[in-house]
Length: 220
Image (cartoon, rainbow, N blue to C red; front, side):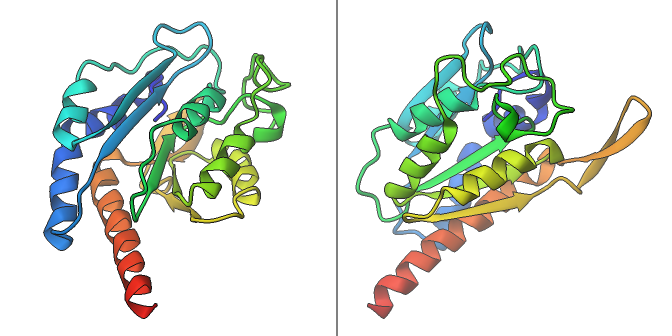
């Protein structure tokens, strides 16, 4: 999750409804043992540029992120590259279903990931040479279901790039929440996501992934 200043309502939903979400999944899939990790990211020069909470039960993860605040982010592009690097290098188990939800309202650094109207201090990409597409591809090798939660159109170019390199396993999908509400920026009105619906859509997505797995297993 992008944890910069504009993401405050989304972070709040994660901090307060994570356990509820998991319990709702268990109502439909009581046999599921659900472990939750959290990776928060900001940008170069920000305090706590990367926050990594390892896989554990949902209550412990929620307790670990209670103090996270939405802050930082000088330009519009953010440090997506290091966040995905950390995601790949988490201690993934041999779980039947592996899911990443990526929630962000800004793209990665690099002009290949956004249009020219996005402010970016590093238009050539990550200053350390990391390419987020490499880690997205590695997540596909891990057979991870990668779901991007779209809450602003400025991430569209990045999402297209990620989708193009996700070809080895798992699935790549987008949940579009950008039409849920609007805000005025300057002289224009633009669509942005509604964080109030986040828990519901994530619950449905997780349930669908688990159901798909068990249906496929029974068919074999």
